[in-house]
Image (cartoon, rainbow, N blue to C red):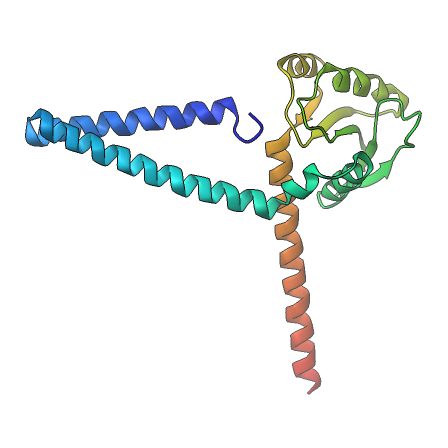
Amino acid sequence: MRNRTKKEQKRIDELARFILIVAALIGWYTTKTLIGTGIAIGIGLAVMILLAGWRAASFRKRMQQSGIAEIDQMSGMQFEEYVGSLFQHQGYKVSYTSTTGDFGADLILNKGKETIVVQAKRYKNSVGVKAVQEVIPSMNMYNASAAWVITNSVYTKQALILAKKNKVRMIDRDELIQMSLEMQNTLKKENKNVSTMEGGSTISNN
């Protein structure tokens, strides 16, 4: 569940069935024999295995690039600071609440007239309704227009239901990974541009 959502798994299962059905139809209509159909299905299975291998390799590369393994080992405070850096790269001004008496929010985000309270949960297990229950009242305390919860894990069904009822945005492991990759890509581009400018400056000085 942590590495693959139910919706994603459903799409994979549907694709697998589609490939086998198409392979069987092609085998039957081209050979009109059960042997030919069986061979076609075998080819379909081989294609599925190759796709699964490619997908697994892509998934491992994505996980490595995102740094999610390191994120999973962070302390709660380190995770909050990391989350803050992610939102800073999205253009938010980030402030952190005190470790005690935070009224249910770990970070406060500001962009223009928008104020958002965020609770960060670095968990090994699923995040439950308590996180949603805590962040909702913090909106009034910090005069926020929205409330978000972000985690390196996933949420229970009950937590998602409560969040939907109260319009709380729930950022799970998959979205966190995507945010991390986007930030790293941005940093790489910025570093590349700086190196290019420095290289050009050196050449012009010579």
